Length: 383
Ligand SMILES: [Mg+2]
Image (cartoon, rainbow, N blue to C red; front, side, top):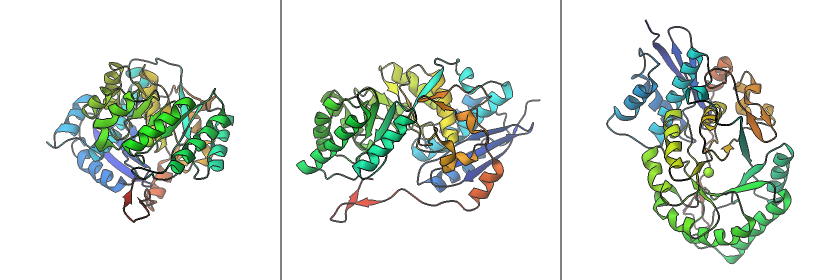
């Protein structure tokens, strides 16, 4: 008789880090990271509700489970269900890899590359702080960094604001030189008319890509921006399945950024990647959350041919410094060398967690959420 799923438990550590643990009758444990930043409790409730569809079932037929999880409630789609299903899907893949004794990327067809290029964020409101961050990442081996506008922009902002941003990013190019890539996350802080102006001024700096030049509700206009610039346009962290991605892939973007913890997990992002390949679009998977999400993303990156680069905020070059990495029992499973993450050989997702540390942290979760910004007149501004 095949094994059955005995229990599913969540550990909500913060608004950016929550894991689910799927246990089976034969003692195996699969980990997943169902998380939506600043909406962690909502996703936790969704995981609890969806778990009722899995308890007592054979964990092996992942796609059959995915069909039920995504469709059986009649209503479907969106970030909350996309994230809840993502964590459960990751845990089922982790279980399958462990049951068969192979890494997940072997189950997806085997590695198409030996290692995965990683980029990290260079934050800082002040230009000097941002430059320091970028310099330290490059010194640690990164070959690409990402920055963002330090504050929101008006719908049509001043010449001084535009020139201030371009000066800031020119200083970055001067700091890192032409042999290192940088990307800019507009974070949807920029309106379509301002994006058009900024992209024109950015062309001589040749950024690797500009991300989310528009918020997701205005994706229908992203093709206009892509057609008006030579800067590669990226988007996708707020798209949750193939059907969300399809019209965007047809718009002329260069880079798609699905998040394996928001867009239905390994099963759906693997299919999104294949759809992107038909449009000559490469993936730069989004990952601003924890180590299980990154481990799942890296398994995909190893099996998907059209991957440009992988995002990570976990300071893999100094993993002891990042609070989320203290839950990883063997940090060397996320080894970072010369700007790349080495191919893991362990079974499943290739990561193990300290359950007792998770349990203790989840008993007093950090409730800090993303900030809420406003314009000088008090009205809402995009963060
Ligand atoms: Mg982003």
